[in-house]
Image (tube, rainbow, N blue to C red; front, side, top):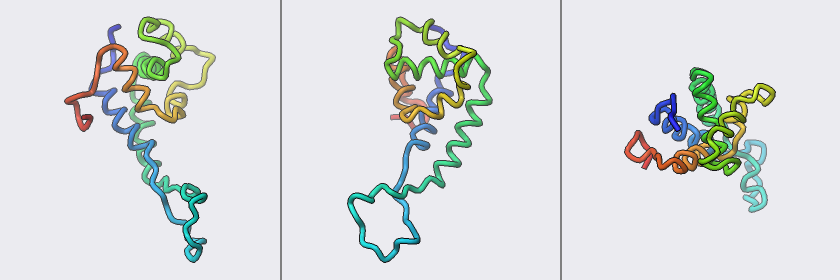
Length: 135
């Protein structure tokens, strides 16, 4: 498998994906006097920070060439377990399917995108170790 997208770019997407996936408990100004309830612990999540990161992630993905977006999606599909590393061509075909949802939307809707990309890289003995802020 030869990628047209750089490993550094994929690693930046992983970093941004981790930031996008992180949610912190927020406050509900309408319920300041009510005691904390364990059942409602995650009822209100602060997404303000995530919106900026999601916009940055969307912009980064939209700036990629079509073949590069397809490669990112194929890596995510392999990392998710839909395909294995030996099925790279099939994963790439699925990522390029003209009848499927827009690949950028498909990527942004994956709840564990950064983990899928990381696992997809690992399937090809690649990693982000030593690149950027990835450990």
